[in-house]
Amino acid sequence: MGINKIFSKNLERLRKLQGYSQRELAKKTGLSHRMINYYEKDPKSIPMNKLEILAEALNVTIADFFSEKISNPLDDLDVRWIKKIIEIKNLPEADRKEINRHINSLIKKHTLQKKQTEQDKTRIFEY
Image (cartoon, rainbow, N blue to C red; front, side):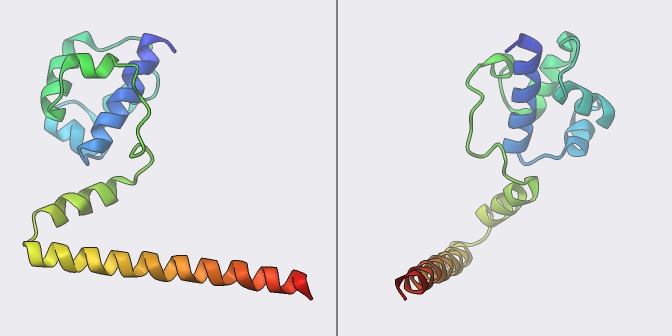
């Protein structure tokens, strides 16, 4: 993978990890939304004169843009979910615990439903 592609993938990944949309990052850096989009979509050249601005806005080092360690399980996470997680982090502990209980309950319900569906399919084939 070329250096420009590594830069563009890392910029997108780092932006998402901070919970920013492209428009929000553009506003924070003073760059245009179109430029942020261009930088994330395999630019022809790396914006050397903008690296410091981007790094500061994302609270990372310039070297982070060029790390080949791109794989991250959060890459495909919707920015809206990241923002919600940040909002939850700022809630009182009792509210965070309540949200956690609710999420665990939903996951358990889904897991049981899935297991029941699999058992039902198995029974159909037994007859």
